Length: 230
Image (tube, rainbow, N blue to C red; front, side, top):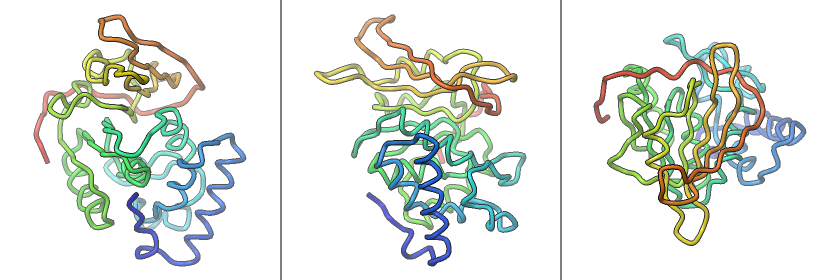
């Protein structure tokens, strides 16, 4: 686990994080490893300076470039559905602020992340590096996944998709005596989405188990043609 909070933090922020962890627990997040990660990541480093007093409120906040840092409950909820284990290979579609990637790193995952906004990705990668989080990043179209590092134990999508992109399904790890790779993605239109988990159950084209959970609201997942490493 990478834990940078002690060198990038102070007592006030630690206490606010503790209260946030309790809020998430009260809202139904039960995965202790997810809660420990939330308690370790300095979320105030991932928000605009003007909003740092609200960094540990359970709300989404602007990060510039018409983007937001996701609500902590949403991050914790998606991460809980992924069931991350140490050394899992996790693909994140939508790097955004970097907060979700940092949570995954705190849980011991090997994180690969794709972002379509190049200036945002450059800023976020610099921040993650500065905080000591090792994340492999790429600028490009997240709907295509990242085949070079597949298969993945988990894929998490932080934007809404009208349907599940086929490349993400095929890049999930096949079962090898244990459960196969998991994809967590909000599926639906602009009016709202259903958080969906797809688990690969075999090697065939239809060997996937689908589960649907609560409703959320995300920005749309955009299919783009850009494709560069960063």
